[in-house]
Length: 471
Image (tube, rainbow, N blue to C red; front, side, top):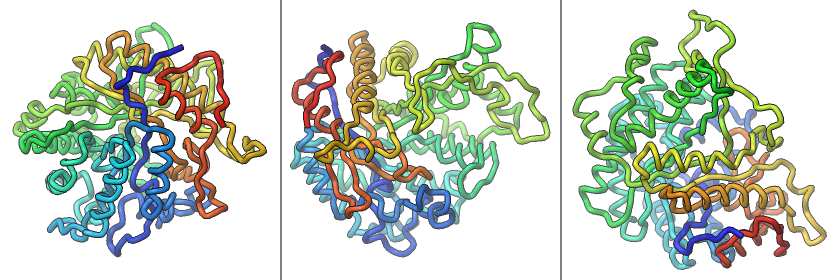
C-alpha cells in the first residue's frame, strides 16, 4: 500500500482550446490553434479540432459535477487569451467570455474543486501573430503582462494558483525549429527569441503579481524531458548534456535560478542564434523567479552521440549535438509511440531537490492516450481501461516515493479529466477519466479509471498489487 498525504493534490487538467469549442466566439478572436486548424484541417485526425472540442463552454457544469463525483481536489485549465479581448491592443475585454470564466470558477469552488488557471496554453491571439510576429516582439511581451493584470484583478480573489504558460517551448519548436506545423517556417534564431521572450514575460508577470500582493502563487508549467544518455561514454554523456541544455535548462535555469546557463551563450554566438536582450531585462529575470513549478511528464527522452556528420549547409538545429536512442526492450504505449518509464518521475523530483533549490512543484500533466478505447467497453458500456489504472498507479507511486525522499512535491494532476482534442491527433488517442462519445452528442461517462481514481482520492491510498473493480 502507498499512502497519499492528506494535503497532497490529486487532480486533473485540461485547457481552454482543447475543451471549450467556438460557441460564442466572435469574429477576429482566433488563436494560433484556430488559424492552424482552419488552414490545415486535413492534418487533424478525422477533421476534429477546436471548433467543437468537448463543448465545455456550454457543458462545463456537467463536467464539474463529474469532478465533484470523482472527488478531484484541483482542476487546472486555461483562460483563452484570444477570446478574452475584442481588441488586443486597447485590451477591451469580451464581457461575455469573461463572465463565462467567472461562472466556471464559481462552479468549481461550489463543487469543492480548487481552480488552477494558466494564462496561455497555446492560445496566442492570431491577431498578434499576424501583426507582431507573435513572441518575436517585445510588444507582445508587454501586452501579455497587461492581459495578466486584468485577469488577476478580476479573478485572483478566488483563484490561488496561477501559471503564465503551459509548455512554453512547444509551439516554436514545432513551427520554427522543426517546421512540422503551420506555417512551416524554419528559423532557429526566431525559435530562441520566442524562448527568451516567454521567460521575460513570465518574469514580468511574476513581478506584477508580487508587487500588487495578490494572495496566491504564480508559477509556470514546463515540460522538461528527462534525458538519459545511451551509455556512460563521454560522447553519449555530452549528447545528454547538450539536449538538456537546449530543451530543458533554457527555461528551468532562468525561471528558478534567475540566470541562464553560462555555457549556453558561446553556443548561441557560435551558431548565430543569440536572442536579443538587455541588461535591464536580465535583471528583471534575475529578481523575479517563479513561486512554484508545474511539470508535465509523459515519457523519457533517450539520446546518444551523433553517428553522422552534420551538413553545414542546413540551418542549425540542436540535433547537431545528439540523436535519438531507442532502448531495446522498452515498455511502450503503442498507440502514442511513447516509452513507459515511471522512474522518470522520481528522477525529475530528485533533480528539482538537488539542482533547483527544492522549489515547490507538482505534476501538472501525466497520462496515457489510447486509440480505439471503445473496444474495451463491457456489457454495461463502461470502458475497462486497466492499462490507464496501471499507468497512473505506477507513476503516482514513484511520485510519492520521491516526495518521501525529500523532494518538495505538492501533488499529481492527470491529463486529462475528460477525453479532449489534441494537436493533429484530435480525438484519436483518448486520455480521460471521462469518456466523450462523439457519436452521441458528446455524452459523458466515467471509465473504470474514473471510478478507481475516486477511490484512491477517498481512501488516500493506492494498492500496488490489486487492480480493484469499482464499476
